[in-house]
Image (tube, rainbow, N blue to C red; front, side, top):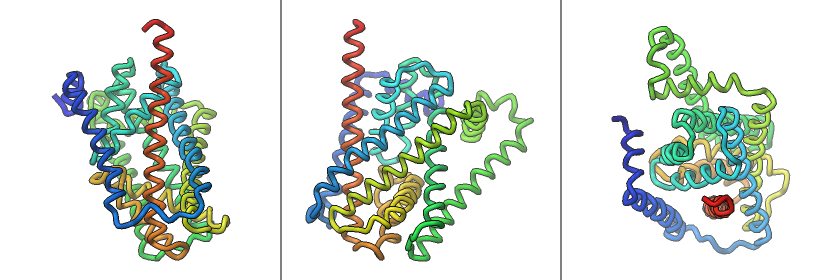
Length: 326
């Protein structure tokens, strides 16, 4: 029995479900506590209107991700409602706050299977979603670094490029390796649960996406990145007024910080790694204290938005099922 099947079997037990819920809530609590224990204060901002403006923008950016997940499922032939797919998406996201960064994949797959979504299809959908996120984020980062007035300390700029290049190299190596062994693996490929198998199947399904739908998904991901960068820019302006012309700096910097933080599996939601990237790119514009305080508040805003969206979709789903007599 592989890890996924064991995990699936365990989570069917009511006691285990309760334990998992407690672990998620405890992880979120410790995540919030990490802000309070930091030496960087979350007070002293001067423009509360900027934060109030940033909150709905963060909610909108997350909603775009939820919509993208719904469209990916539709493209994979999954018949599910917009409300249910979004509830599945945002509920599973809360598992990201458990150290390891990948727990939400298992939770979303199992929750999806309980709602009639085949586990293989869920894995393909999650793989495509992560792929879209990483690729569009890399495009935003590289485009911003080349075309904007971005001011990055050379060592951090090189680090970002090296990590992105390494990720691309590994991806190409995996693709070439899979191609070279295609004949030998043709029998096992569909049954295998290896990373190579999942990525290859995801790419094969991606080629069958309708072009219009594919373009819409890409635009949704790009727009979500822009909104997240805009929200981060507004939160920074709560402490210090930054010229609007530097918005084109904050968007790629935020994308770069998120991407590199995502590659760190040891901390929940890449905490610490993202901040290190911000510190290496933004001190020429704002002080390190403002950088760290803004990053913390951005994380807290994202957490509140995720909890709010999860609650809203849960309520809508419950009301809908009650009306149908479930």
